[in-house]
Length: 312
Image (cartoon, rainbow, N blue to C red; front, side, top):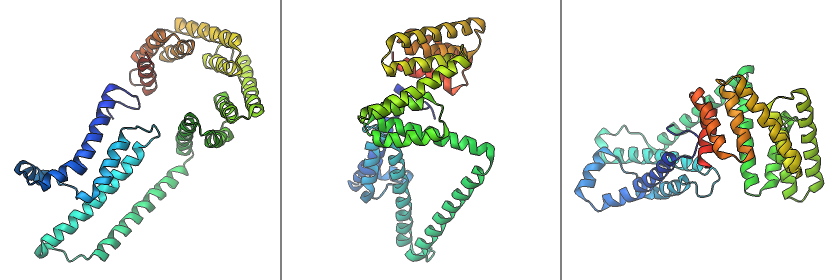
């Protein structure tokens, strides 16, 4: 919530604090209580201690929170912590009933189990009903589909990065069904084909991407993203001369747009992308920073600026 989806020194510090906190709370704190140190015992009045048998949940979550495996393992950490806290709650309630028989409500273990099964089933039903209800609305359906597609693309890129191109290909092809005219998808598919040794399929995907780029270039000759896309496609073909020619065209168009409308943050944003593609990191940061200053409420411009800054 503080840093957003960008890797910063603050976010890294919070990540380590979270990991230390999980391990400290789930393992060190219960062990310290067993030593019967008075200060720790007083602290236990304010901060309930988890039972020691739950330490694997907390320690594993702490390790996963560090992101050492670079595969979205923080999501697993959240699941483990949620489960640990749920078990801790049930354990504490049971202990209270055992230690206070006069105040016990007479709830048996079977009754308690049924109660939580009904609660869990109700929550799942309401969550499903809400999801399907929202998805039935055309406007929200489009937003949800876009969000799902973004997630699929993210996971595909991760599988590709970890050389699991077989899975990445399936995910990219799923996206291609809804976006058949997206050169970026075709370039990723070509890269996966190339890594798996299917060179003919890789060339076919690149030719298809090039055809779309050239067609869009004729239709909208002054559009910066189109020229950038064409440069990236030529780069995959290994044609450096045409890549640089497309980049020069993209730069010329981007500079012309900024000159014509200097207060438009989107023009500065795309100029930053051109400089980034050309390897000019200093000017890329300057352009992204300008876009961010012109519209500080935009997450897109802030993300691009911080990402470029981290690459310096």
